[in-house]
Image 1 (tube, rainbow, N blue to C red):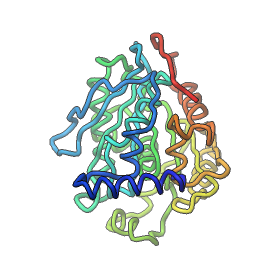
Image 2 (tube, one colour):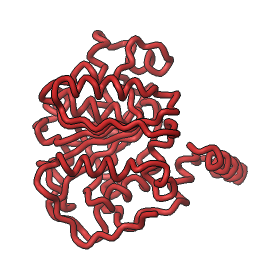
Image 3 (cartoon, rainbow, N blue to C red):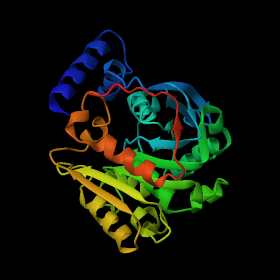
Length: 304
């Protein structure tokens, strides 16, 4: 996150805490006060795709409505230990303004669950999409997955390893393309507390790694990161992109100069979109491989 904004947000959150408001984070504050894309709107809040309190999702649609639009399921990050869909409405509106019916699910996190339970939650959210998204103008036969950080891991695992979707009763072929922003895809051996906590109990560590499942039947992938990312090193993006290219899967690999780990998320926003052409490049790629041309009714977009 840019240093000036992070400092401002931290100060604001401390001020709110002094006034007794405890539920504040820099990202939550940014989502609450930052300008939004006007071409997208929140159409459904906290629909249940399971019985757990964190098995809820939000749906965003183009402001003018949609018919048979590609569906984009976006998974947020948080090291599989934190995160909330309510802090990502700016992402939902940005992607809906690009013509996607967009779904942002919550999912269970550590220490309540470990690998692979959060992937089962993601698959359950996609099953909900299959059964319900037509009500919002989305085409359940054309789904693309995207995510940032740990959410990029979730998106790529669900796209590359078909077992989770099959377990949820979803045909993996409905996933037309995937996009990962600053994601960990090739991080074994586990040399950090987070990876040991979340994945260390897995009987076969190789089966926790997205790169293991990259094969000729994998969906096309847009993979992006920043060259200043010191949390999830760019080699994750580079190694997965190379593996997919080796098996002739279409890949667009982008390493944006000057961006750090948080920047690849913030670049989706109106405020920081000038940092990199990430939103336009990612959505153009996803539309290219989503199949039949989507139809969007009179969408206007506020874009700097």
